Amino acid sequence: MSVQQEAGADTEALEVWIDQDLCTGDGICVQYAPEVFELDIDGLAYVKGAEDELLQDRGATTPVPLPLLTDVVDSAKECPGECIHVRRVSDRAEVYGPNAE
Ligand code: SF4
Image (cartoon, rainbow, N blue to C red):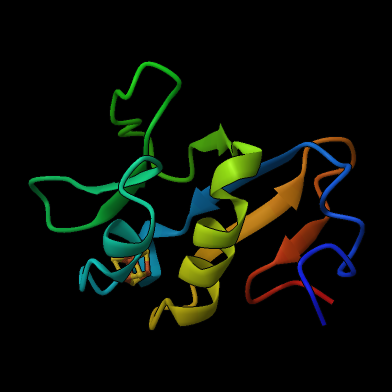
């Protein structure tokens, strides 16, 4: 199933957050989407804000830019900690990640 067919994700604003409690710090997400994810000095991955700043609050969310959607979805699929969550902004329903239907 393509990205477009799943949950109508091409038309909905999406955001992504990381559950740092489960992050293994392997950095796969940073390899896939360095514009969105970064490892902090604690060895765990965090999302970045619109100004490229690291959002160091655990569970912070950031918008998923459409051109980066595939990279972010691949990150969520490959994340060994199963701790990358992509959800719709409108109803906070998870569309990619361990809790997606
Ligand atoms: S891929 Fe998952 S487990 Fe690995 S650093 Fe990123 S968030 Fe953490």
